[in-house]
Length: 136
Image 1 (tube, rainbow, N blue to C red):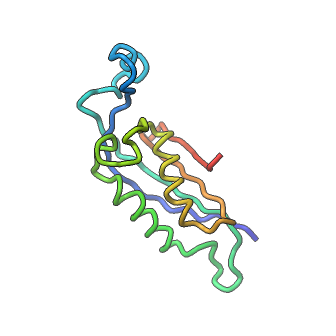
Image 2 (tube, rainbow, N blue to C red):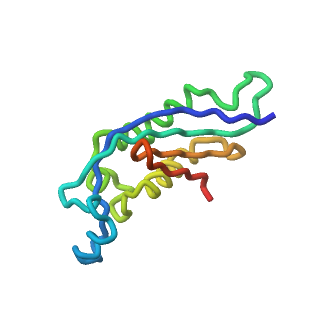
């Protein structure tokens, strides 16, 4: 039997969407207000889901406390109250769009989840704008 467990988390972070190899005009045309040179912030909401076999001994797909700790260590500690462009090494050369943030989070957590379990990351940048990434 398979089941999916999910854990919600959140972090607050600032970022700027831009490409240093583009002109200011092109950055403004593509990224608009998100290209503010003084950055802007979001209250990100995160849902991490793990799908796998239910262990017959424990009844768990995995211990939710372990998933909570992984999210805290890999995401909240690394991203919360940070400037993603300046403070988070993964975004030194990667535009911190919601899509790219989702992929970075997925990669950080994938290394800590059993290989035979599926991982899904849903990242809300605003209550109406969100990204889902499953490693595909």
